[in-house]
Structure formats: C-alpha cells, structure tokens
Image 1: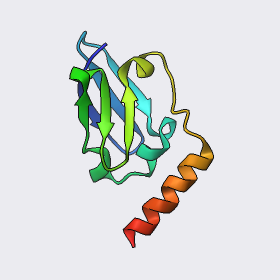
Image 2: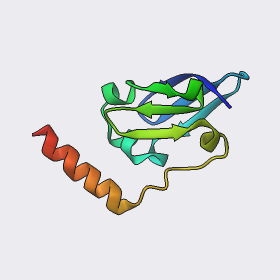
Image 3: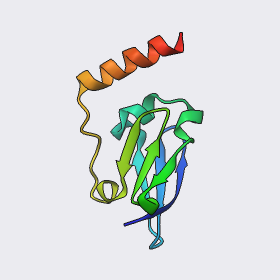
Image 4: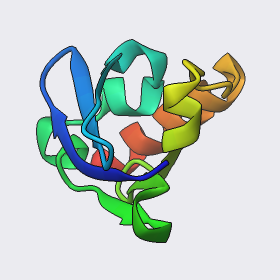
Length: 92
C-alpha cells in the first residue's frame, strides 16, 4: 500500500493512495502532528516509496498500512509529555 500525496489542514490530513483512494485522518490521532506548526506538518517526505510518511521536525513516522487499518498513534501520554517538554525548551 503506497501513498502518492499528503495534504494537511487544521484538523485532518489526507493521504492519497496509489490505487486512487483517499484517507482522511484526524490530526488528534497523532499528537505530534496535532502539536506541530502548519510549517512542520507540511514538511514531510515519503519512506520506502510511499509505504510510510516521515515528519523530520516532529520525529513522527506513520505507516500507510496502519492508516488503512484505522490505527492511531500508540505513543504513551508520558512519552508525548516528555517530547512536548523537550520541544518547549528548544523553542525558547
């Protein structure tokens, strides 16, 4: 399952698949994307010819197969909290 494009707005991101389908996914399924700036969310690249999507500034990788299966981020609240604390310190 490969993606050909990603489009992001304030609440969702849409992944276009090579077979013509489009998946609209809520940003709140992926806290790092939700907490990212529009610039960070729009700076992504494909992994393995579209099998995954990588956001370098947000340290987020998402499998297209997982999106098709309706899987959300399984990152713990503790991990997200540590990431946000580090992110806020780096922003100062």
